[in-house]
Picture 1 (tube, rainbow, N blue to C red):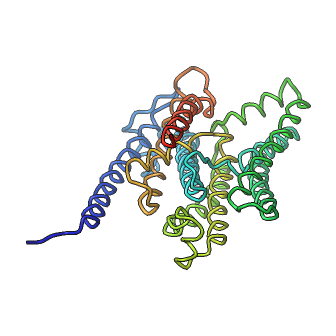
Picture 2: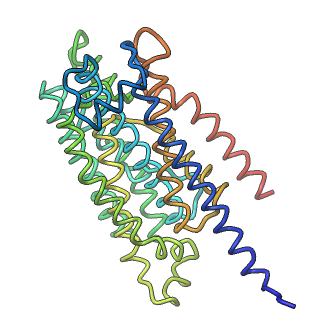
Picture 3: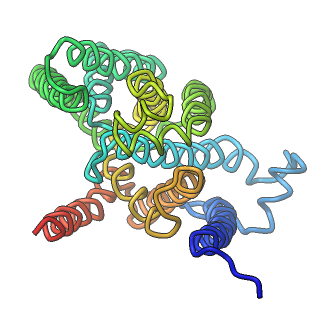
Length: 343
């Protein structure tokens, strides 16, 4: 008779489940991406999409809309969703807290301050994007160096420093909104802070996609080390891994993803909080399986939300507002579940 250990059987079943879920997510991603080209005020049938994209049919009336408007926006929405979801998954593992989101170290607040400052100075949108990216990176650096000088545990120090940076950045942003021109600048700042992809073009997409790719490479290449970090620093050291160095590299990769996503689409919350939980429910906590599924789920989710934002009403709804209606109840659900689990 041929017997297999229970752990080997469970491992095989987990891999089989991952393969099924991953394949389904690829199919869903393809369907959502193709169908997104048909969403909008100008209706484009599916039969006109493939000739324009793959054959370069410039004579088609749909060419300009597909290639210059919808294609950059679709790529941006999928990339932002994937970036926020993957970075949120990494942060939740590093801090061993399921309620952690990508803006825990102040990257979103810092980027919002940078964008508000650039808008107040009446700079072109591309410079608004650059300023938001720089301020987001600087906020995380300030958070890290502040936490490095505090005599608490590194994880707690980072969280406390992140809260301080967020409060400070939000205060400056509020001040800029207070002094901004109420007839023009204030509305633009408010709209950017609510999150939107209306101003995405090829130039802005190219600027953000490069650091996103670097961030994805960093986190995907250290999947095993992220698993070890979830066990604690002592266990990581016993396995020959430097937890401090590993955490710095992981934070750098997650920050590149978060800052790139925020500077391209504005403040879009809850994606990095919700999607990793859903992915973890289907494929488990192992990052070898979790990150690829999280990548696809995050991209699909935000692309679907963006399709709703630009087609539900005659005027476009801010993307951050739609996601907040879903994310806030989900966050309350997580708090209730966590509280019930500790009783």
